[in-house]
Amino acid sequence: MPVDTLNRAALTYHDHKNHFMIQLTKKCAIFLLILVPFFSKAQQQPAPAGASAQELADKLSNPVASMISVPFQNNSDWGIGPNNGSKNTLNFQPVIPFKLTGNLNLITRYIIPIVAQRDITGPNTQQFGLSDATASAWFTSAHPKNGFIWGVGPALLIPIATNDYLGTKKFGVGPTALALKQGHGNTFGFLLNQLWSVAGDKNRQDVSQLFVQPFFSHSFSSGASLGGNMEFTQNWQANTTLLFLNPVISGITKIGKQPIQMAIGPRIPLAGPEGLRPAFGIRSVVIFVF
Image (cartoon, rainbow, N blue to C red; front, top):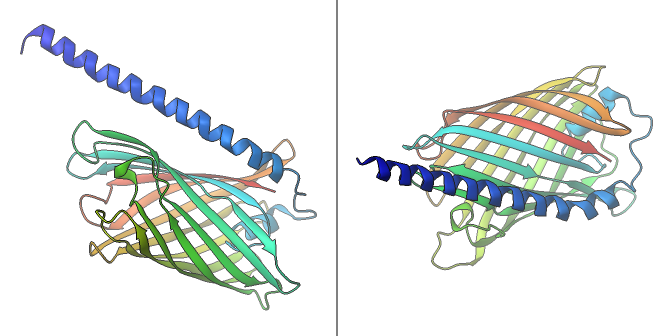
């Protein structure tokens, strides 16, 4: 191949790479600006008073704890598909509780994924943007007994994806439920939802997907925790199963007066089709507690 052709190819590659990084920076900046009003409002809420580091760690292991938390969960996966692709998913997933009556709470959680991927849809391809959002709401007792906590409610699939490859273009609904048993320093439970598409682009495949997440955690007096979960996703339409094991170690700390939890651990793929299952991954989490 002539030298000038190689040079042009190299320049084209760098131009595409630079363009991708510029767009990534711009979109991240826009996203952070969107979050400013949320954080301004959230910081008006009082932080948990009188809670020890271990008590705070136990509350954070409970998905329907009655407190505002703002997790940023980052999943980096490598070795995906025949092109050895990579994918990074940053999940912004605030949890906001509402007190409905003296005995009933409504706990809401919103998952908004920001995805950057390379060589997934083909060699030398890349996509960046929002993926579809999921909103869940659990009605749960304000006064659980004997450490047993449960919640049931609706889940919504909201088609906000900014790239055709990153979303379903379908609006979906379905039920969600969770149950857990919590004692001092120990939490065991599971969460599940089933989503069916009910509207959207007729040219896209319908959605029928089950998600099941058993989880466990053991906390220490220092606020450190050992735990993890398994994430089982069954796509009934495509007849595919994806299963991950996610062990994590976490700790409670503060930035100024702001309590946060930080966690990290491997993402271990246990099952899945070749085009979806990565060779390995890492999960890191930062949770702001209000």
